[in-house]
Image 1 (cartoon, rainbow, N blue to C red):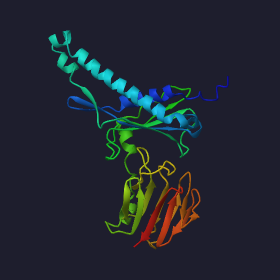
Image 2 (image 1 turned 90 degrees about the horizontal axis):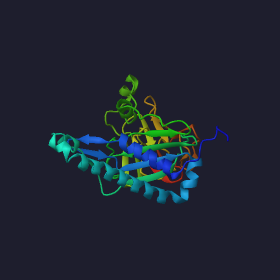
Image 3 (image 1 turned 60 degrees about the vertical axis):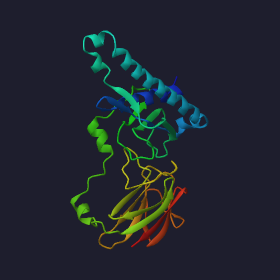
Image 4 (image 1 turned 90 degrees about the vertical axis):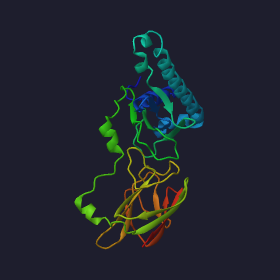
Length: 285
């Protein structure tokens, strides 16, 4: 047996990681504990391929496992809230927490990691408390399991919070901020409908975003668009804009590819295409 090759992932591996993430993402408030309702699972492209055709079935099995875990927790709460514990005054404390889920159903989605961050055998799970159409609450934690090693411990609360924060600006960057003056407009349509984004600072990061990927313009679109797809920068001295492609599947300006990890000048008006799946209409003021 070649010990250098990671073991093949199975559906039970995904279920185990989601359940572990569920427990790590609990959010307690008074006598209720909210469990994450949304789970987005990322696998390396090699590991995702065997799951492609059965992903809906596996997602259904994961939802069933989440239902069972939630029922078990609440069943234990009722069990220990009665009998001898109540007689000695411990019943109220034991039964104080009710485990609840926001929304009517679990959201479980399985994606290939198109950003090339994961190696074969790795599982990455992002979880959120609320419904998909609402703002992210920041609950849940990023977990990663690597074969054949044991699962890595969840990040502490300070590290988890830091992943969702924008990068700190230097003094020069702060001075370059335009104090609300609109420098350009980006018009586009994603799964959320028609939108207009006002560019009011000298750097704008665009992509699908995520708990560990800060973006200024967050797009609701296909996974072909990277979580951090491109960056638009303005030279405060000349007022000229450039765009840098940091994606997996490419960025084009007026049909001309920018080139991976390369930059190109943005004209006053242009169509910016991301991975060929969404177009942004750019207009500098």
